[in-house]
Each structure stands twice: as structure tokens, then as C-alpha cells.
Length: 144
Image 1 (cartoon, one colour):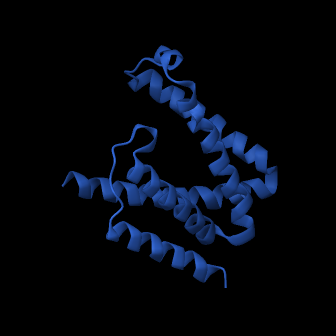
Image 2 (tube, rainbow, N blue to C red):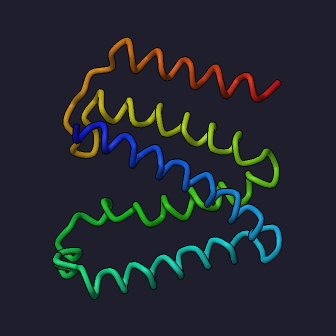
């Protein structure tokens, strides 16, 4: 049951990311790519700070003891959003999201298979490979 609930939440979150892509693609056309990116992360920082103040139970000072390369997630988030802001006006929300999801799937399968970045190893099976081939096919169909 927990898996099913997670899948539903993950699908809904994916839908929200498509809305985000459409919104920021348009915003980027009107205010500029980097400006739209800055606005997203500025608002995200404010909202995160409010949530942290009221609900945070962690220890921010522990960041100083964490391996610095593990903190690259912030940079990767900027790259992700910039890609959407630039790509959506060029190819549309659907194609942008398909391309991003294909990149996520390929990389996720490699991370799982080899246990990179401290992840537990999950060997690539035929179902995962079939899903990847279908997604690559979907992306290829959008190119023609």
C-alpha cells in the first residue's frame, strides 16, 4: 500500500513539474532565462525557510561536516530549471519533459545498477530495460 501511495504522489509531482516547465518557459521568454531561474530559487528559498522555521527538526550545522561534493544538488537543480526555461519555448512542454525523463531514467538505472553515490544496488532487469527502450522510442518519435 505504501508503494501505491508513493506512486500516486510521484505521478502527481511529475504533473506539477510539467506545469512548472510551462510556467517558467513563458516567464523566461518575458523576463529572461536567468531571471526566471533566479525567481524560482529565490521563492523556493523563502518558502523553504518558512517551512524550516515551523517544521524543521534537522541540524543545518551538519552541512559543514557533510562531503562537499554531495552538495552539488543545488547546482543540478539550477541546470534542470534552466533547461526547462530554455527548452519549453523551443520544443514545448511535452518534448522537454520526455527528454528530461529519458535522461533521468538512463542515469537512474546506472546509479541503481552500480550502486553509485551510496545507493543500494538494484540490478537492471528486463522490465527496467523495456521501460527505457519504450521511453527512448517515445523520444525518437517526437524528433520526426
